[in-house]
Length: 493
Image 1 (cartoon, rainbow, N blue to C red):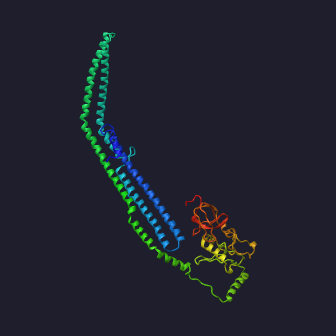
Image 2: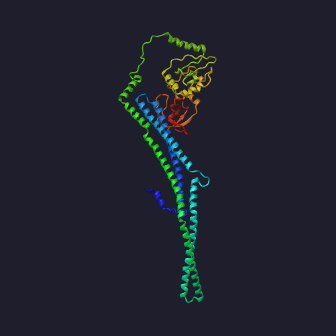
Image 3: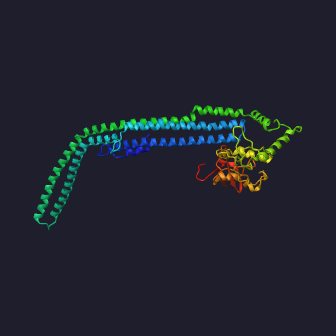
């Protein structure tokens, strides 16, 4: 079946005419450009596969972290994780396709072009210049004879036109009585002379045409030899390009025929089928044993009064009078792996200072509001705590902004009813305020968090801590929010 471009070539000027060989030279140049275009197309596809692979990988990492953070252990979390794992595996498959396109297709095509076509400074690839030179050499003798024949034919035609014109003038002079005898004789002589010229130019024209036809076989043989070279080069290039297209198609087909993805989906289907009602019931029973009616509890029992409880309070008071040290009005729960610091590590601790003493007095039992604030500090603000850790400890304690000596040592500690401006005042000293746009809605789960609405602007007061929480202010309220739910101007989401 002939393609449209092949039909157009058939309508082009013939091969044997002088200069018509340039169609073969152009086809060779077009073949070189086709190799370059195929390399360009394969690179673009490789870039697309690389971007898609990266997006799949980022998608899997993002939602894996989200599921780890928000979904409790159980069947739902298990199958969700395996589904996210499919995205990670598919990312690797597309990344492998990118590598195959670059290593097998682009590099192989570039190597073939480099070995088959040697770049020249002036006229492009050396092989194109050689083919054009071969055609010109084969056609040069023919062109010389052809141009000579064309010249003789032109002269013959010109003399024939003059002879016809002289004959008309002679006939008119014979019928016109006003023409003298001498003039009529000149018309007759001119016509006879042109008739002789016609015969002479005709003989020259026929002679050059005979010479041209005698060289025809030599010319055709030389042109056919060069044309055969062109056909062989085109055959080699076409076979190579079709082979590269076949390899590319196999790499594309591996996307849907890969055994890795097939086995992964079979395992995923099996895991989803195993997450049946019985598995969900086991998850619910496990939840009930920890957070439900089946959970163990230390029910209140009668405890006999012991003097040791009063002694603890007495020792705390005597320490204050004897040492004049720092009195903790709040007790902060710390994990064993975090070293204890002075009272300026957390904003919920109010202190009184006395020079020359290093001992810290015992704190009074914490209230329910204290527990909430302590949970807020130790759970989400490790980064703030670390800022204070890096400062050298001295005997004189730095007072947080929420407390002033003018209030006296008996000022009440912060409670759950303390305004946000006082509750989070000491964070403002160590942050740089910057605006951010909320990307997702967020409903606070605890009292020290703030609600977010998609599209509104929030003032970010701290950088994210190790758990991904920031302090911010929105609508006059200060509190915590997830850092991944907002985006600062100029930053990528």
